[in-house]
Image (cartoon, rainbow, N blue to C red):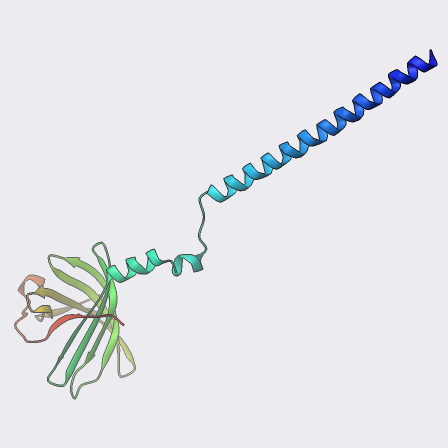
Length: 180
């Protein structure tokens, strides 16, 4: 009986050993499949770009190039530079006047494009003093021309009395140039 029990015990040990080895192989394979699946899903998940990646992505640069335009007038020892950043009907940018025998004005614009016109608030520095005034540029066949007319002060800022009656009859047309 001891002999039969010994054979049974050896058989059971063999089967148990076989089953444990088989179970280990299955668990390793299952673990590998689960790990590979997680890696695959992680690689396919939507990627959230860091601010640095967004700032230097080709798409962001392309959009910026499309929405940024530069214009210049040079004549009679005068120079006017306008850089615009357009977002729908909103516009921001820089505007610099270097007029012969006058103080240089350099500043920013913020406003909108409406009826083929730029209507913006111009915040500028001249002789160390910051000032504001409204500027209106009309897109003519010669280029963007600033409109001049009667002004009034509203909340401390000079604005045009009637935008529809502005005079664009001058030679200072800002024409497109490449942006640096």
